[in-house]
Length: 205
Length: 205
DNA sequence: TGTACATCAGTGAACGCGCGTTCACTGATGTAC
DNA sequence: TGTACATCAGTGAACGCGCGTTCACTGATGTAC
Image 1 (cartoon, rainbow over the protein chains, first blue to last red):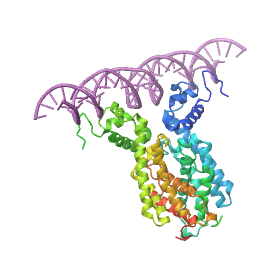
Image 2: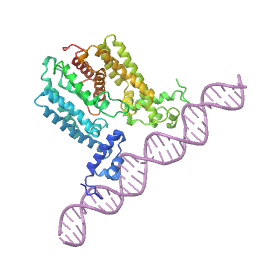
Image 3: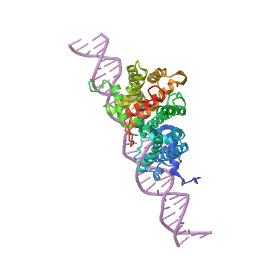
Image 4: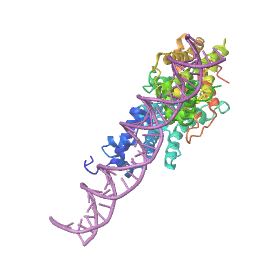
């Protein structure tokens, strides 16, 4: 699309895309500003027309990630309505799907070491994403008798942790780790057992 | 103990300790060979008397971590015997305790990017550690009627993932993330709900 | 006990490298008249 | 339509830096006689 030449046309986004590719390939450490510039066909110095520096570029990648992530979670939640259970399970699946489909974003968001409080904008996006899962958990907890109902934020945290653990341990081509099961199955069955433990689905499957 | 002077006395271990401290403070990226040498009071070149290079030093730290980890898990498992349930829960708690007590080791093992297949020795240690949790899961699964018994390796993977997720998301002073609950409580309750889901503990707590 | 000598842990200077960042510049683009 | 000019995206050379690694060396330690 860009007219190729002295002026790039859409360098800002091209740099973000390059960063995402590099992060996907080599992790947050392997990414360098110079290499991203090179991959976008541009001098390292050109990056400074669009970003304050290396960190700022990663932060932009993370922000775009949070944006997609929040949308995806939101969409999954709505697609499961009006069933609280279906909505909840859908957000769990969406989490994993996002991690698989956007590994660069996922790493930029959760493993690059950039703080979510770096900018108010980033913090807001992150909160929005998290709140979808919490709302789903909250809806669902209405089906549990109040006296044995755990706080919704707690079991939202459980699911978040389980999902993140599955991603980190089994959904990456981790060096030398053999995944015993497909991550999707692992997460699905894990959430299933967990919800049964809460009395939200039938004891016998 | 060491006589301090031209000869260090126990430089090899001092370097590993320095590496662990640096990793704890700044993550696997922040660690540099030069800085570790400096912290041990020695020239960077001296490192090469004891290690092949930077990677080799991290690998040694990870190996020592796996050794402690396997011991700790083993001990927890045995301390819970003869109750399969107690043994299982103890290993879960031991996982988290290890991550908290030995953050440098934990990061070297799981977040430094070094492959577990780097050396046969490292692979063996890692397998040993994992096998403790699998054995505990296997013992426990004997209490589930065979026809609705999930593979032990599966629910061992669930617990591993949940534990790892709790560590990564809530037991680190993650930049800007507020932990809603103490990680210990989060893991304990999470495992509790999960085991209830498997029918291994009473539906009502 | 004392001396000669081998061993080897650590030194310090040097290297090449790629990094992030800066700077004055240049040349393409778009707009005013 | 054509020319003059302002704008600004990207250049390319340069910087200082700390890195991992190498090398010939030195000086402490331990052992043989």
